[in-house]
Length: 160
Image 1 (tube, helix red, strand yellow):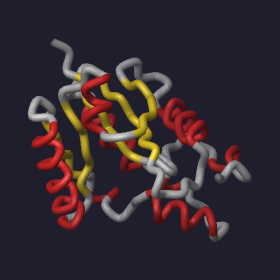
Image 2 (spheres, rainbow, N blue to C red):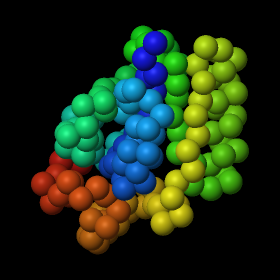
Image 3 (cartoon, helix red, strand yellow):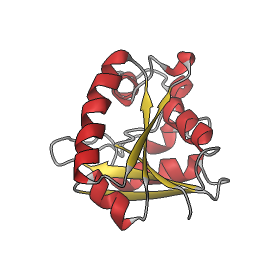
Image 4 (cartoon, rainbow, N blue to C red):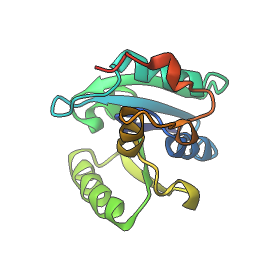
């Protein structure tokens, strides 16, 4: 049976930390679906189509990475996608506590789906999409924190 993992998130925008987690996880899984979750409670900076385009660009040479989006519960999306694994990156102890609670609830709802945590590399620990968005909003250069294949200047003015 194929080992399929879903890596869910808002990816608003994708960061070098996200990219590194996916690339490292490719040694563990046959396929990884980078799934952009639609969260009705969050206002996105970049439109869904732009976020998906960015992610596709990052992994354009990796056939085992697929990009998709979903609404609703992540475990329901996993079932629909035949994924037995949820992939999550952990930067800090606070991330662990938050993610642990979600993983335990997911396990109660869908016992057949395992959550796999990968620790981020130390150099990526301070990087998150919120900080990158703040840099962009303030007119700073966020290129150090996004994958090299992403030119943020291409997406100016496309914010939601």
